[in-house]
Image: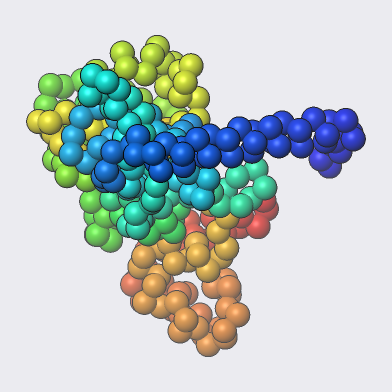
Length: 344
């Protein structure tokens, strides 16, 4: 279906709105500059972005305390939740910091990106230590779906962790699911088992989250929201009444937020409906192949430089499958992913 063309009047209205927003931002930046020059803002200090609202941010001081609503200088673009920043605060006569201005962004250790409507990658969160891929006993997980999430995580350069939820529903023998998990553990992927039905059901997860900044991803129905609600028992009061299915509230429809986990557990969690599911449409065949970590030693060793790892003679991947160095089911999963991308 072709895109509907905008009328001249619609285009004029869009341009007018964008111009008005730019003008407001310029006026605010000028006001901030005047306040900075007049010494109304305090000294520079480090902080971390806990939420992002266009030209304003919530910044949590590194020294501790509540997050402060800050304005963004006009020369700073593309800041996201999780960014480390330098900011300056302005206090009221009682000595309370009432607002701030972000003056610089620190270097990023990592960045999580998603393609926008035009297919261009946009950052949505930064400085993440691990991506927790949640799946569950019910609905039964499919290896190809897990592989898709692993490939997407590997493409970000952020360490993936597999989280098996609802283990209270797991048969004693474990069956095929245990065999599936053993396959990923053999590749070096950490696997954490959880349940919200037992008091100690999140002990292993707490240990994995401690001291790290994490995000959760996974398909609908696997219990991501239940896990997050248990990990952040006091946050629902802070962000308003949220849908159990989407966790969308009046002010949190698309905003990623960074939460500090309770002190007993430690660590931080970035949560957003836009982060919880992310796909592969922005990857090419080579990137998908590199997302299968056991392929990496064999990539670039095919007889033909343009080998697509199908039936070509001298294909290093096919030979590795024959020698038992690559699991045939994982290779078949790779082929299904590549074929699905070709189909759009």
